[in-house]
Image (tube, rainbow, N blue to C red; front, side, top):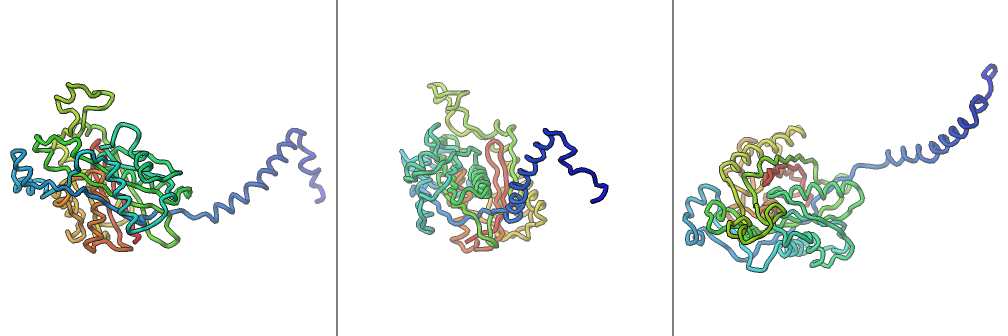
Length: 371
């Protein structure tokens, strides 16, 4: 062009020319390919593609507890809504229940366990401080090339483990993630403490997370929160670095569950409503849009109060605490199994899952059931 002057490079210093050449090279080799990749990449959604649960065969009824502590069947049913709970035999640990749950999952959804990329276990009753329960589960299942870890979040353990596993699948690098909730609460229950021993049972559940195909259903959203001030109301003080095991800690029953039932109940009622309302509002939904509500099974009154606040009829609410008690990290997958068995959970259903646990921990997850 007339009057345009010398080419751009002719007006630059040698150093600037070199810099310009490098910049052009970078743009030519990365910019357009990155833009192309970005335009072709679609978000990966995780789905629950299989479920398995396990409950030990031994049953502890309210009639049994009447012989052990000063309580009655009527009082227990009125206060927490539990009729019986399952208890392990001596020598059975959390990893054993977890492995049994995975084997149940395989019965309904056979696949090669060697394809498992990650194992996440929610538990507050690990076999031991270390190795992790995930390591023990990996070894007992014979999975050769995987990794994993435990999540300690009290009764929120399964939901926190689930949402952790979801993020690994959403990264696009993980195709099969086992998420397990397993607890042997009888191992840390003082069966002379009537306020605690009536509540807890043992059990486990496992789900398989996989990427959803385009248009399929899956995990939609989650919210969660921790509030450490609640540590004073529900805890097991012995066995950690603060109070290592001694004759004194054993004599003082510091290796058992300590609970301030009144404060735990008040918080749980408030927080379960808060978490469920938060995730519904975030997704522009109401309780009427939910097909199935699966809450942590800690107390029947907490579950029904939340459902009532959300305007959900009880036929949409899964309650099995009367049969199994509070199995901590096991309650949500076990309740999922109950919903399937009772025909109240089917493919395409919009499901709301909520939990409150020791810590305090709390959370809610919204999903579309995928099978």
